[in-house]
Image 1 (tube, rainbow, N blue to C red):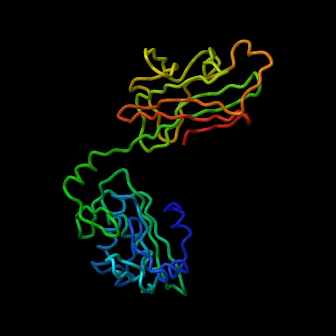
Image 2 (cartoon, helix red, strand yellow; image 1 turned 180 degrees about the horizontal axis):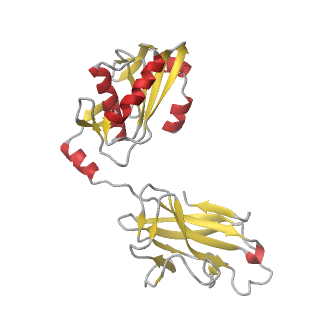
Length: 309
């Protein structure tokens, strides 16, 4: 279950269940109490700032407010009892007001929800997504960088901060296959989908044309044009190679159609297509690791888009 689903579905009864089971804190779960719903206490502000910084600089996490955690025999903090929040609506308002100032740079996607048990009383839950734009400094009087390790937040070392400053948003490239037509008119458009958060520059794609398909002479537009220049390299295990210089880019959440596969002119007589064909491929881009994999493409249904994800 993803953090987003946990955040959106958790209820106050679930919190009671966590306490009954003495749920341990872990890499993506933290319990906290508050001093006052207006978050005037420096401790309350510090807890918020550390959680935002630590979770965002690590794998993201869920923070449940209004639960007392104590260490068990193994020294791990576990949910022990309730400390339900009075004036719950006020507390949520203050969380929203402080979130934009609790970490620098601001963390995208932080949200807070009330989990009422009675009129304006109960628990609250916060979600902090993992961030690719960090490191994020805890503010509100902290002015330190934190990370999450095990069940605790730790101040980041210099090398941790230096490493994160060297990171950037990265593309995530996958093979795209769009099947259309049927029988002798079946065609497969091959391309690259970028499901990452960074732009892919100078993309490269190599693949095979699985029998009985061939590279189409008509290209992707019917006029012989292809999405990337053809490359000619000896010794490659994959015969169809395409790549561009840095003027070719694939923006996040977009697909670049590269080439089309067809059954030839004319198609073989008495043709019987298999249910699936396997396409071996390699994908990479500037400053990205090369991905080598295989995509099984179903030919059973037309007008379908398939991805290696």
